[in-house]
Image (cartoon, rainbow, N blue to C red; front, side, top):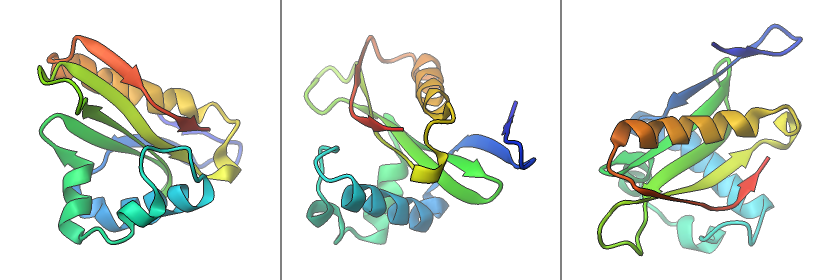
Amino acid sequence: MPLVFSTGKAITMRPMTASDWRVFRDMRLMALETEPGMYHAALADEIGKTEEDWRTTIVGPGQQVFGLFDERRLVAITGVFTGRDDPSGRTAVFGMSYVLPEYRGKGLAKRLFDARLNWVRQDRKSTRLNSSHITS
């Protein structure tokens, strides 16, 4: 069920697809620029990524990025990934969360968390969960 603000606009969550790479890239780079030190990567690490790099970050084996949209506008991102430090591949890592400042404080972080948790439950490979930083 979409969350509707008093403006009547529906806020919806969906898994992002590789075709969303441009809007995802723009938000990810904004997050790294405006919130330095909050993520495992820095702006300098990601600014030179190729289109293919962005596409494979969004969706691939053991990972999924989600977008929260105010109608068509991307207002938040979050991701779930297989933990790099777990050779068994059974640890899911939550991270890469960012909410535009004007949308913070409205309870949207719960939507980000729930989308990732539901993905892990459906994936059924993970037996452990780690959560990274969130800006909400």
